[in-house]
Amino acid sequence: MTSPTTSRGQVRHLARQLPSGPVSGTVLKALTALPFADLPFAWLERHPALHGVILSAFGLRRPIFIDHPVRPEPRFGYGKPDHPRIAALLEGGRERYADRLSGFVSLASDLDAIPVRDRPGGTTPYWDNGWLPPLDALALYGFLTRENPRRYVEIGSGNSTKFARRAIRDHGLRTHITSIDPAPRAHVDALCDVSIRLPLERVHPKVLGDLEPGDVVFLDGSHRVLMGSDVTVFFFEILPLLRPGVLVQLHDIMLPSDYPPEWRWRHYSEQYLLAAFLLADPARFEVEMPNAFVHGDERLRGLVAPLWDRLGVVEPYRPASFWMRIREPLPAEPSQERT
Ligand SMILES: C[S@@+](CC[C@H](N)C(=O)[O-])C[C@H]1O[C@@H](n2cnc3c(N)ncnc32)[C@H](O)[C@@H]1O
Image 1 (tube, rainbow, N blue to C red):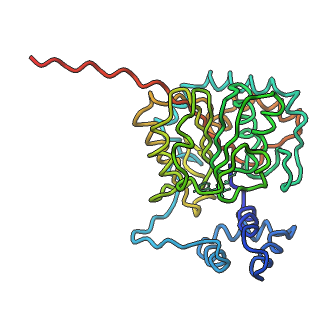
Image 2 (image 1 turned 90 degrees about the horizontal axis):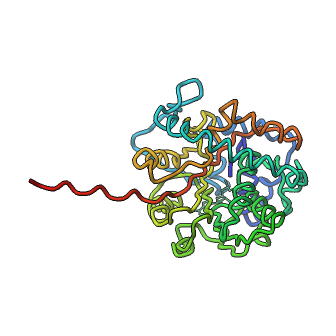
Image 3 (image 1 turned 180 degrees about the horizontal axis):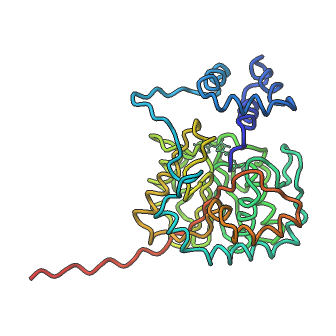
């Protein structure tokens, strides 16, 4: 899922996890509920030291001290050229993305029934949820409907789970939902067939070991490559085991651009590892739908615009789902005979 435009949503989510007794948790919950809180929270996110100190005081952040400080600045996009090789790689799938988008738009009569707004605490999906931007929600609903997978495994749950369950219900899909998340963004246990309330790194890989072609795995967790983090475990221990035909969705991926400047203090790093995999072995992955690329392309964006008009949906957040399918490995090159 995408992160909200300000840290307010994140703080509110974290505050919900604090025990209700302590004064600090209650005060924080009250602060995040104030209608005029967006501006101060946005300001705070641009001042990382103060932001960190305040969140640490509430037990919601842990500082990392590094010996060689880096000033995070986007190197691609946002006024600079995109990464040239990633851009060329994504450009090559343009007709495929157009085909997928047209298929999703043809689901309009089912999508009509999904409200623009609803209760965050409920189980009804809604477009303006602040975490899963509309194009990402559409792609999730659309890919599940198109593939009718046996299994959908979600690492990082909340609004995405609501959209997945809605697609299953609307289309009578056979799909079985497994959610892996220690503290989902919404109350979704009732929507899941299996709920594992642990971080991915503490879950046995066999939970994802039997995925078949067409099955879907969605990673929307910490977004950080660190020793033992969910992203590191996913790329090094899970991705290499996935069979050809399995669909992988990663969230908060802005390729072919860098992360946006306003996210610089989040220190996300997941898409750098994804880019390295794509550049090192492009034949291994078929990019099915890179939503940040789609959103940045006038023609592709235009294919969904009539749907958003029909549904009364505006796209205030940056779409960030990246869908790719594992391909068959290429046959090994015959070894050169020695003379
Ligand atoms: C951006 S939110 C996910 C949003 C969700 N997909 C949605 O659409 O609302 C990130 C989620 O990842 C979960 N998370 C963080 N670290 C994790 C880990 N190591 N393993 C699994 N989930 C993790 C958080 O609890 C949080 O619910």
